[in-house]
Length: 399
Image (tube, rainbow, N blue to C red; front, side, top):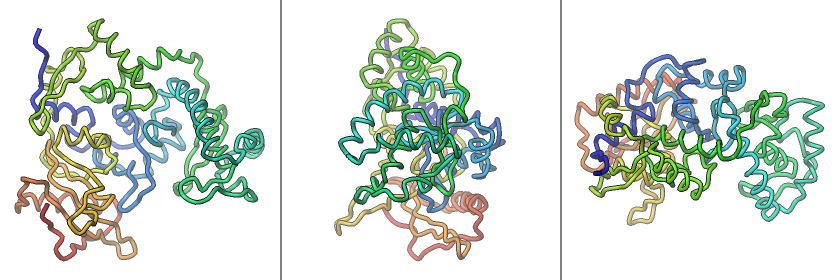
């Protein structure tokens, strides 16, 4: 029997639909409506970089332009509809998924203890009981509330004192929960006080199956490696075994799709793949600014295969300088990546400083496209609470 096949346009349409970028960016963006959007995405990555707005806020704004950062903060810190933990990076995740993080807690408890013993060697394990006792007696804490007299490690990301390492370990292994952030600093409390214990803890096989099913449904099509990487909880071997079982049972099929460069890629998908792709809406033609950490682009290799969009930060000119800054914003128009823009909020002056824009190869920067950009920037100004755009000289660059 011939494999189902998607041309590149159909694959992009289905992929964008699964990432909530296939419909008009509109609709309510708070409370239960916001939780449903995050559940549809699976999670939203958190990131501290704030050149315009934080990554998680940009991700949600791109899909719901009425969204404002306070909406997520309330859903997370007040309504407790989300919890914070790790996927491929720190993320907020629907609380309904919490039972399946028990496997992640157990695995992190084992791997991080061994890894951090080798890296840290500062006795963080000896701080566990004291840290838990302090939180039990005094309530939520940040890392600055503990370990004031402890020596930090030498420099870099690991500039942590032992109590900070203990807090992170106890959070990653499930004893603590993050209850919110002051600025971007985590505050921790006992998980038992914050999150109701699940009456039934799924066994590992159930969680592995859930992770694989949920990943494939949110991607539309994927290799076993992409399925494993989505939540970054199951191993590559477990994902391959799940795909083999699901294929034998007829719950998934093998299919092929055309990549942007003309190559053909073999993937797994649901049996109704071609019908789902045909039913996916045509993405809206308006231009949108995306976060570099947007879930549709997070896997850089997949973004290049699917959209021909090479988001490489280590790209150098002949003068050996980086061609694109680390935090340039991708621009999407319908199902096509049309450029990337280097811009930053100059908050003291209330302006958005647009320093450079690079159209993608083959994209003409026409008057109509410029008008669409200016319409999107007007929306961005409202979102970021800025007044105007400052266009730097020579902002339109060649690729």
